[in-house]
Amino acid sequence: MGTRYGFIAVTSDLDPLVSAFTEVWPRYELTESATLASVDDYLLWQKQHTKFVSANDWSPQNTGIEVYGCLQDGAWAVLLDSSYVLCADDAALARLSVKFGQCLSFVVDSGSTTASFMCFENGALVRSIDSVEGHIRLAGVPVPEEAGLNMNAYGAQDAEVLQRKLGLRVVTEMLSTTVLAMAVTDRTDFGGTLGPSQAREQALPDNKPWWKLW
Image (tube, rainbow, N blue to C red):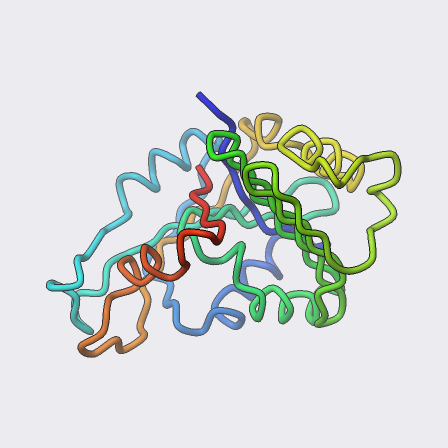
């Protein structure tokens, strides 16, 4: 089984990130939350509380439920994302960096040989690395922690090294950490258009990376 994960990290205590969630993503409304003893408990809670709604069944009264998790990792507040969307939401990540100074996004899927890293500072994307099936796209100025890494061959192992250099644990080291799980519903009025789950499935063409995080 390959490594598959993704998260957003900001330099903050956990409470300010949790409070900023609906400010940065105002379309979401919190419906339920729970403090869980481990990532495994979070994944189980996520499975139990996520509600998929098809395009045909979607309505403002039946919007489906997504579940996200927040945890503290040293100086970093981390948002676990299994919605396929938040880690790639440039505008929202930029807003988080305005609020917290710096915002990081990591996505790794070794099964599809996909790895992505973005760093935003004070509202601007300053560094991005996209690796899809061996094709690397680099943009911006390297962060200091990239020193000694060959970003022209960036992959899952390089992502883990970069995380450690940034003071973050890799996902497998976070498993026993307490997680705040948040169940949210998307209040966007999609009308006759696709609901959010279907929109995610069709959002990017085949030649663009698209990720599931856990």
